Image (cartoon, rainbow, N blue to C red; front, side, top):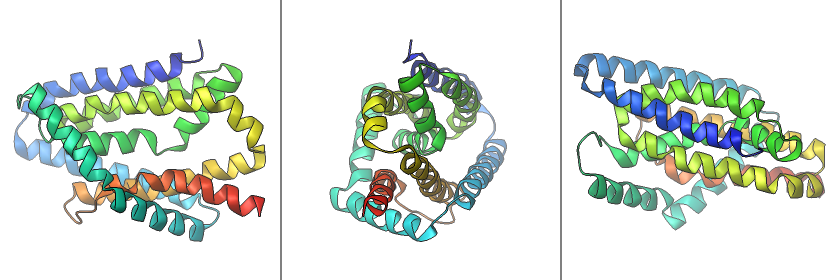
Amino acid sequence: MMFMGAVANGLAIVIGGLLGLIFTFIPEPIKDSIMKIQALVIMTLGIQMVVEAEDIIVTLLSLIIGVVIGEVIRLEEQLNRFGHWMEFKLGDKHAGNLSQGFVSGTLVFIVGAMAIVGGLDAGLRGSNEVLYTKSIMDFFIAIVMTTTYGLGVIISGVPAFLYESGIIVSASQIARLIPEYILDQMILQVSATGGVILLAIGLNMLNVTQMRVGNMIPSIFTAMAMVYIINIF
């Protein structure tokens, strides 16, 4: 079944997050240390992704255009509003900063190239190996993130599932409309753009900056569009 990888990934995030709730009651100094280590690991992953960028100018323009779009439509504000609504519905118990956890978790789980490659692989060849591998990684990430952000990380498993499912459903059309060499460039560029977003998340977690990372989400799709336009024209 071609959706099994996406289902497994969503469940891995939810189950990992539920396990992570057990550790929300650990002493604050230990929790603070875990959060800082987590931030450093996320930043390291982001740097690895950015290093692979073939055209840093495209990465820069993708982020600028994407952030402008996000700011204009106030995307992070809408996501936070949804998070606060969920907090109200679920109550405050174990909620933590639900809206921040939802936004950060969603970005961490979708910005990497594995989501795109795995979705395409499942949609075109019926192979879920990449998404299964991603599920294992996300399972452990969800455990650690939930100790800091609570239920928001668990809920982020839903958009991760929907994002990957959308790629799976669109895979045949994507392969038909976009030549393979352009698609390869898109994946690299999305990974590089996502790497910068991960760096922003890490810096926010360390309280170095207070960037509105939710407004960076359109940059992922802007990167795809820019690579396609550059290659066509």
